[in-house]
Image 1 (tube, rainbow, N blue to C red):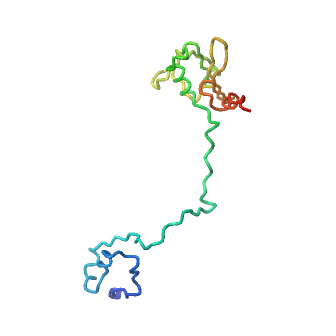
Image 2: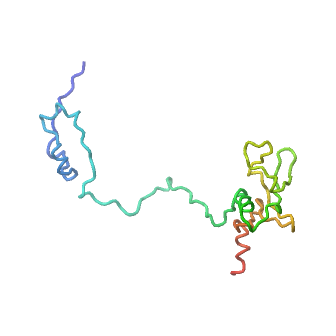
Length: 167
């Protein structure tokens, strides 16, 4: 059996009294308190004399993450456009056609009125398959995923063409 050295109280130069508050100074172990030292819990908090953290935080080149993309040119999702056409009184939902990519039949079109948004429906088509939304009356494409145009919310590339009068 290995013999261990008995616990000795720390010397005064080992304690950092400037880091302890007056309450914690009273919890400084003494030789008589070493028998029950395991039952005492000493909480260490930063003292008011501790230096304030620097305003700038150093980040190493390895830890820097890629800056997020600018959201100015982000195209609104097809679901937002469909909901706007359905619920906004300025738009007639029966006047719009949705073009989508079918897994087996290629590109197909369906009227917005017959579009199934319920996940449990057998005819449900996922939003990521929508290619464009077109107005029936004039054939104008109001939302196109590949060209990134949106004439409903003016998001994506259509925002730049809509604001071209400013230049």
